[in-house]
Length: 304
Image 1 (cartoon, rainbow, N blue to C red):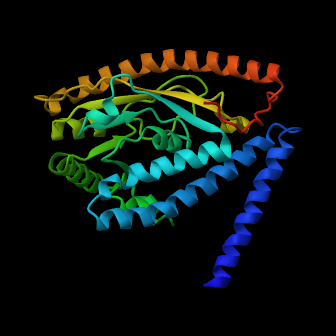
Image 2: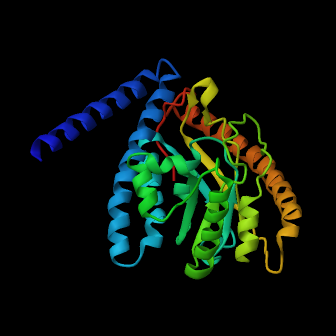
């Protein structure tokens, strides 16, 4: 046991030194910040997943396993703020995250950084859906299985329907909310846009007769642009919109519900992105004027 802990200690020390090296290099080579924050994000995800396995077992023993994903989401949020200087500012003016339950929460899907967005806004008593292949992923897959995630095999439509039916039962019987990305995949968009919405989330909400709660995240390519190897510190706005009721709706209403919800989210996405970019530019100029950081993205601190 002691040798194992020693190896883990050596690994963490070496990994930390590597991250700090790339952060130091970013003062000269801006793209080194991309490597530093990417490495930091991976270790934060691994630590959070390990914590999630333990937390899921402990919470299940006391009958609170529905809080597992919320607890681990918060852990990831704080680790990422500390290690990368990136966070999401959640705007929930009417308190829907705390009061609307159960519900189907939906949001736009941009990059892998959306995992951090979930860490910042994820409500209690909520779980995610995920592709079936993630179930076999070490650490993350173990945590997701223990915490009640709903795995869907996209290549098998019959299993997908069964999974959706099971999700509807969970929502109704356990008052368990679900978070889904209706675009189905990451857009990696440079400008604010939405891919066509898949209808699964809307069928699920109608089947369970629970509201849909849209969550819109500003386009954050000014923070993370993978194709350009750019990864900067900063705050990204995320807004919770008013719930859309589905009581009395049937499968025949899903098409219109999908289209109207997408239009609503797209309009908010455009407005939110304009505000986010203006704020980011102002903050960057202010930091430069104060002599705190250059525009290379090497400042890893988050301001309150």
